[in-house]
Length: 211
Ligand code: BEZ
Image (tube, protein in one colour):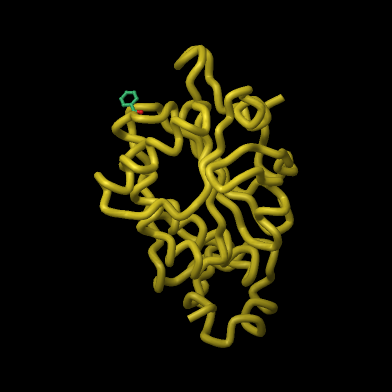
């Protein structure tokens, strides 16, 4: 059955470019991003994996470990990683799963048969330290993902987890955030010493608490 937000992210063991990995052991207490690609030696994927490698410091700052999935075998992965390093001017610095038996693709419902009978689509899961699925995005093979948006949603998810705030449309780091409806205005005033602006009883802003 397809995964949904709030579900437990299934654990698995897989062969990767960094050796055999147990997903939960790999994540430890970190946040995780598991993301799939249609195939090795494809142009959009090459740019996506290069971009992910470039953002290593940004993921590390957020305590996020990334793990890529592609259904090709390990020897192809290794050749492709060389190409990514060469063409994207990076060193790929995260593991790439060789999901030849489609175990991970099946667990995470990454094959959408009406898009392609065999290749995985561009699925991306953000998994919290509690191993629950916090976010899923699914793109078609032909559209590369926006990795600035991925960092932005991680920031939003972590603000919600750590500070009980939500983020408004088009929110960017540093802008005001929204007090979640579960907190009364009276409690919000105590909880957010930088101030609470009440626009409507259900629409209350406060400066980003972790700055
Ligand atoms: C790719 O790079 O993965 C790709 C690009 C266009 C269509 C399908 C796949």
